[in-house]
Length: 173
Image 1 (cartoon, rainbow, N blue to C red):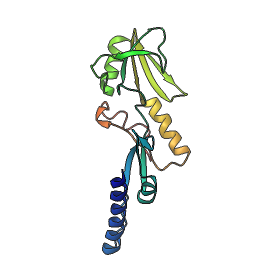
Image 2 (image 1 turned 180 degrees about the vertical axis):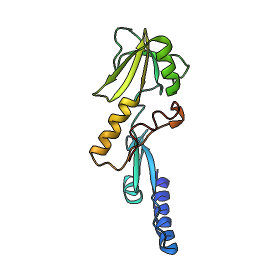
Image 3 (image 1 turned 60 degrees about the horizontal axis):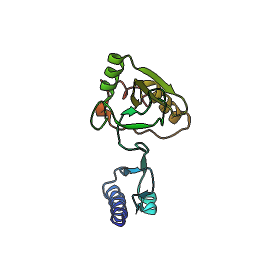
Image 4 (image 1 turned 135 degrees about the horizontal axis):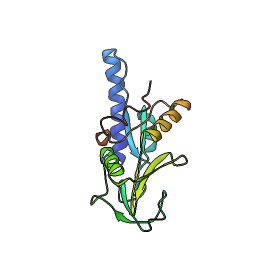
């Protein structure tokens, strides 16, 4: 992590120099970091990050392993967020794209739930549970960012989007 701090400092210096030499607007330096400054006992160089970066995205997801969308519920009647599970469902890793989730819902007549506290969606049928963001949760998150004058928002894995439905929801205008 010490080398990361040195790298960020060198990048900042290089960007500042490039701008001075060319007269162009200084380029922005950004990075995405794990949500905790103690990354598996490796401490981030916080001061170098603070001094060097213009924009930081916090990777605030996947707090529970395995990192997947689809889970096998222990009890079909206990199906809310944080319900006990016994492992991945549908695929070996449990990960599904939005198109696969929509198809699963349609094919299985799955119950869909939007949770206003968590600001996310999930669906379930029997012991299969899938957590995901839908247009409703994305619209709420983008609205929150706009109402609080945040400078933007971060979306992860647009490649799993279904025909850009999620990517076009609540666009920053």
